[in-house]
Image (cartoon, rainbow over all chains, first blue to last red):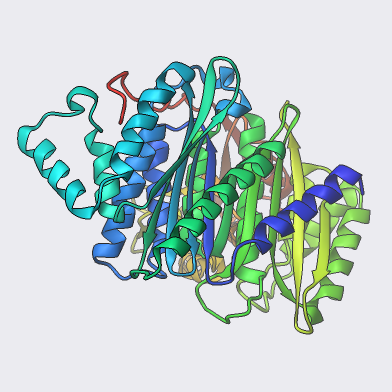
Length: 377
Length: 141
């Protein structure tokens, strides 16, 4: 296995490992459009439903997502001209009782000072002052009145209990990268000093995560529960975002198998009917799309799966086709959800060996990572 | 024979089998988790159709996305259609997007496994409107 491939398999595990078992993390990097925004919202919403009851918390999170996404969905130049450091980012993370929503986008340096001023102005206000300011602006209908903060920002501050943090990273002479993070605690915390410390920790964490994703050219990273609902949302995001091409079609076809593989065959610490924990990421380099997935597997199934993958990798195209046909012609399917075709199909579709790794975690479970790639041209 | 009509969902195809109107079509996407369950009533319907088929039948498979679990079930349908073709004139038309090499390959694969008349029909999709970009406007903050 090439060193690069090995490293990437490890990155998949590391990205998964940094998120707790009851948590999730969903990150999209790229050019944002309204259509994408709708799809991201629906994916985030279905993930939230597992943890948050309908009601004020869900509304608050939803609202802040909408505002945050509007922030990044601004006119961006020609998609092809957007270099990596200018890609927008949207992230929603669940960390224990907290929900963090982070957006990032590039901004011309000449606008940084003014924006910073507005952000600081809002973050220095206490709860009551924000409410008052909000009432004033809504009352007069005057947006962005003379150097004052805009309604979007004030709304975010109001709904999050003013837990906004921001950061500017210098890109070059003309550009900076602007991060805005909102924390929505699902219950109130006592000690504010601890809170501040953690707030800056979350921002640092997000920035370093973005650097990792950027280094690996990862555009989509979903770390959470894989059930049919989430899978369909992920697929529709990919379908909407990729330009129509042979390679894009293949990416979609292979992604279907990789994602359903997690939901159908993955194991999990919590035995649930509604999908399994896992990770999926899609990266795009100048030459290829790289698809990576990871999920738990019971140790007792590892050898069987490893043997199967070894076998599939050792077959040439005509042998693979024979293998595929043999399964098609078998009349009886023992388990209706398992056809045994998934890996053979992936191998045939990407027309190259699949890369994989098993990492033993404890007496019961291992972590299985799988990686394939598709040439862009 | 009563027609079989199943509306498409986000992950299951539309089924339109009507002996009187002579329409036999499966279209849209097929990505269900449990494909066996979804295709069971369709296989049942075909088994009954086998007893008294129209003299001429054209089956159109017009599926945009397909998981492997569905491929297996679709093959079960085709296998059964192959049997019906022993007693009546049947053609299968396998439609695929010109850029979808995988859907084409699957059609080609099926032609090798059955004897029924099997036509591969390539189509070109009109490019969907690109996402509407946001209007140039006020800065958000």
